[in-house]
Amino acid sequence: MFIDLSVVPDGTDITGAICIVGAGAAGITLARELNGSGLTCVLLESGGTEFDSRTQQLYAGDNVGRPFPDLTTCRLRYFGGTTNHWSGWCLPLDAIDFEMRKGLPYRGWPLGRFGFYRWYRRAQEVCQIGSFDYAPEHWGVVQTKLPAPFRGPHFVPRIAQLSPPTRFRSAYGAELQSSSNITVYLQANACRFETNDAGSEVESLLVRTLSGSSFKVNAKVFVVAAGGIENARLLLASGATEGQGVGDGRDLIGRFLAHICFWAGLLAVADPPSDFYFDPGYFRTYEIGGVSRTFVPFVGLSEETMRQRQLPNIKLLWKYETPGASTAGGKLTHLHSILHDIEGRPEHVNSKVFRREGVPVTGPKLFLNLEPVPNPDSRIRLSEKRDAIGMRKVAVDWRVTAEDKRNGTTILKLLGAEVARTGFGRLRSFLEDGDDAKWPVDMYGDQHTWEPPACTATRRSA
Ligand SMILES: Cc1cc2nc3c(=O)[nH]c(=O)nc-3n(C[C@H](O)[C@H](O)[C@H](O)COP(=O)(O)OP(=O)(O)OC[C@H]3O[C@@H](n4cnc5c(N)ncnc54)[C@H](O)[C@@H]3O)c2cc1C
Image (tube, rainbow, N blue to C red; front, side):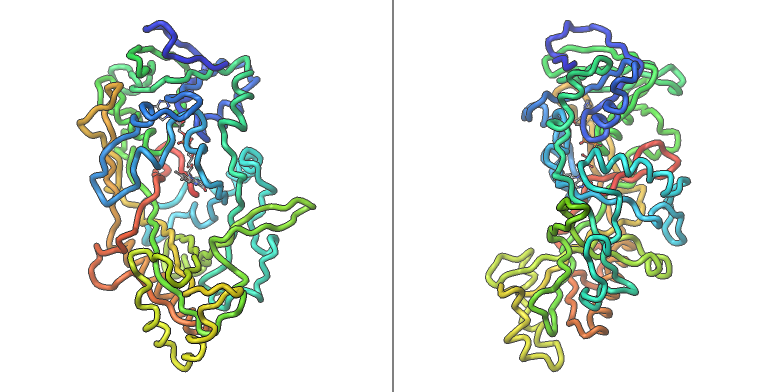
């Protein structure tokens, strides 16, 4: 059943065995698991069933660190959450992501990846994708046909599966609407968990509507599923007194923010084939069991190389540039001189290097998604400003470190060496040596937070 909380009399108490805050990917999935269980479940959603700019503005906050995506546009605040515009890339965490690793403090999990597999298989169904199989060779990627730098030992082919992408609102809304034990409250903004005096136990949840009503939700179990940034905001804003925080005994909530994304360099190919065969970042289809499935290839680092060289995980994509097309930050303007640097290959510069399947290209431009070194100072705080329901806004303080820069530089140098060693061409890196704080101007962080195992929050990865 769906109930619009703004028409419920002010002050009405709401009670359930379980209360879930947020009807996005996580909240809807959990509510569906509880559907038919006999447990009364309250699912609180800030928005309605359609986008509404007043509700969306409740996401507004300040970016006080490095430039970070606009907080009011990178997430969506209505039933279905950010799945209303997510892209649908799906892939599991790698074995190495679970490991504590030398040189990478705060990293690792006390859980093995196998504990996740059962749930990953279920998640495949939820996201309407095929079997839990991410081996590139099972998706028609033939090792011997790959461009030489990406056949290992350092850089290897990887694939992500593509969800349609599932819009959780249209895919699962009706199921929750007809549920006898789930009640979805729309226009219901969770503002603060109220605790006992010791701050050790949550007693109730204060909920407000934009129309000015207040409600108290009582439940045995509360689940926070309001998205990475809002989860931290809500927990930090809670407590016996406002702003004391709940569940933050180790001062970890809201820390370890964001992955690093940037246009990292340009590949000038010495003797280009008419078809590169492996196009990281470009959607492909492959028939499995008579069904055509969509996937997207990308380049990763091999686990051995990550371990031996103490490097973080990456996702490397590329994009073919056409002459005359606008370029990110004008980075391609020196391409001609780069190509002339390829010893003994000037004829290819003039004839074949710009060609791919008959379409002129100026060479693949590389996009790097780099796992950051876990940094507790890269974080979400509460600002002193308040939103329309009186809740303190977020201040996002996204930071990167000299070590992140060193990792990015090392990975690009390694790629450059592989590209040269295999005779594939040359790499021009956009990461300049020297100033540790200097990154490409178009670098940005995505909105994921990572919280270490000591904390109960979840880790997600695109
Ligand atoms: C443009 C874009 C593309 C993306 N593409 C991918 C991709 O390809 N692959 C991938 O894995 N991930 C992708 N993501 C990330 C993915 O969408 C999120 O990781 C995922 O939606 C997170 O699910 P969630 O349930 O934690 O949060 P959300 O889906 O954001 O849901 C949170 C819900 O909580 C509600 N809410 C917030 N605050 C409150 C409150 N105080 N009270 C009540 N309700 C509240 C919101 O209205 C919302 O409905 C993308 C994100 C963006 C922005």
